[in-house]
Length: 166
Image (tube, rainbow, N blue to C red; front, side, top):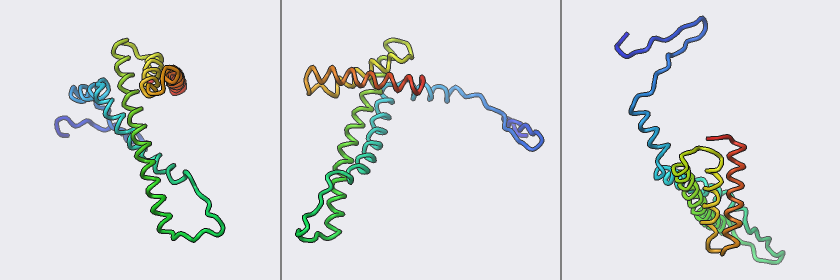
């Protein structure tokens, strides 16, 4: 057996490999990715953009279906496909931007709140949800800000309560 190799544990009918302890480098990189608000911002933004674009393309083709009049001229299938593709891509772009913005703002605000409070509890989700809802609704005025804050905070706390602490 070479230096550094771990012996396998063999039991009748089963073979187990011995567990290895994490190295200092893996601990540092894990902490960097989990504790850095900037990393969270980019990961949530990119993930939100990809997820939103996919949802937008999926749902974009389902919107605004027009039933042709009985005596209307027939439109070739290629024209229908072009219209579908245009709507789907436009919807994907819109959904992608929205989900990227939401994910980036929420994850960054949750990270900042968690660092300021030095706690990891359900209230971080509420504060981050309130900030995100208010930030995304600021163009609608004070009433929209209040509704956005309350609704996203309640939703975030409910999801955290239902899913458990992450």
